[in-house]
Length: 157
Image (cartoon, rainbow, N blue to C red):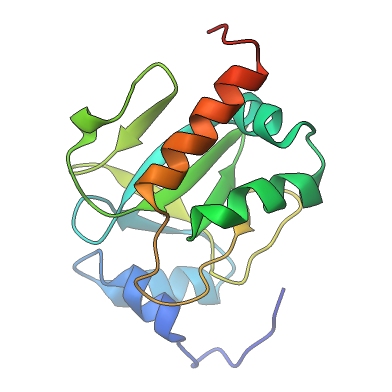
C-alpha cells in the first residue's frame, strides 16, 4: 500500500468522497485505515458480479488473470468478501441490467469503499484501482464480461 502524508487528499479520493454530504468522514476513515461508506446513485452505481462468474471469464482464479480480464472494463473494480467483484459504472437505471448475471446497486444504496491505494490481497480491496477521478467501467464491457463468464460456465445459471 502506498504511504502518503495523512493530510494529502488525492483527486481520486476527493472525487469518490463527493458522493456523500460529509466528504471529510471518508477522508478520516481512509486516513485511519478503514474503508469509507459512500453513496451510490449520483456519481456512480455498482454492478455486483459473482466471483465465480468473473473467475470463469478469466479461466482461473489467479490474481493476474483476473486483473487482466477486469482491466478492459476501463474503470475501477472492488473485490469484497465473501466473493464479489464490484464494478463502478456510470449512474443510471438499474432495470437495464440482466439480473440473471449480476445485480446493480444504485440510488438509496451505500457501498463500503477501501482507500484508493488498497490493493489487497486480503479483505476488501481494489482488484482494479481507480486510475483517475471520474473514470468508470464501461457498461457494455461489463455486459460482455458477464456474458463471457456465463458462457465459460457452460451457460448454466
